[in-house]
Image 1: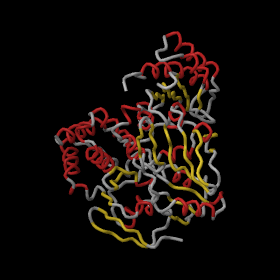
Image 2 (image 1 turned 120 degrees about the horizontal axis):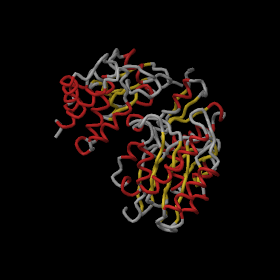
Image 3 (image 1 turned 120 degrees about the vertical axis):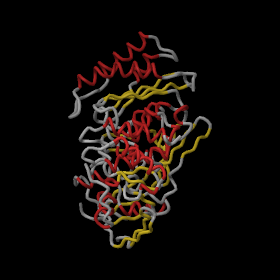
Image 4 (image 1 turned 60 degrees about the vertical axis):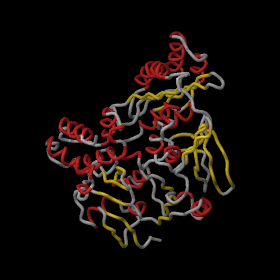
Length: 280
Length: 158
């Protein structure tokens, strides 16, 4: 791969200025680097300049009542090791642990996972089920977008030229679960994944599925079928039927559509069963 | 613009390295500039764990880290791990269990396990610790003795 200029600004204004000073096609951003180095190696990107976020003060994690805010450059392993996360948002804990290996999670970041926007992201479906939002900074100031609006497709996000993901805001800790099917039990990419969360505020379920293109998505028909806090077997079966027959699940090189539609039923049922409401 | 000089502390010794290209990875800096060839290149894509080193005490994939991004860090490789009490315990456990066949994956396993034991030690359930070793692969499939070594290194840390 051809060498590039590497800059590590110390403030977000300087970082934005560095991005603005280059043609968008010629500049890349590095946080943990675990995706970027792949892309550099296979020539998918050939930046003239790489802007490192390592000096920005964004390696943060803050609980404020039920709300969790995670800085975009916090390594995922530090999020995983937060003493509160496992108990208060078990689905997010499980989704973080599904990403790569421990060594990879010491490098990889939540912002990087969102920015990469992979169809088989473990984090995006869970963030969808948690109604999470991203806080962006850019040349025109700050803005907040739902993760649902931010993620568009594979490697496509709503990030504008010169913008950076500063943090991710999870408005409410929720009983939740994340289950996935993959070939190896650890350190592998999902063929199909289901994220569920139950909001104590509106007493409704959120259901998101992932693993297939173009992007992870919520499926409201399944959420409706689950009804209130303790869905019965018939409710779960109706939700699973809706997902298996009507969700926009497709094939790609890693799994067939038929296989994925079969997987989604048990994954949903087990995810609902694994969610402990009132036991946070 | 290429930053002129990188400072690393490698196995306890301060090291200043000049003229490192921006696209160079820590793996290559360790092996080819510093001559520390105990750190192995396996897949170069972060899938096998053979290149694991400790960065500021944490297991890190040196194949997926730009050397410039590690500027200022303290790096421990297999050559220096014996000076760390936890690392020493892991080396002894691998020795006692005969936990290697061809040996290529061994430095990565030793570094990864040392990092895990320093992070969680006995507070991490043994199943979780073994799950957390899942980022390291042994092509000889010599896992039984590696798992035995990992269990015993964890027990001895009581």
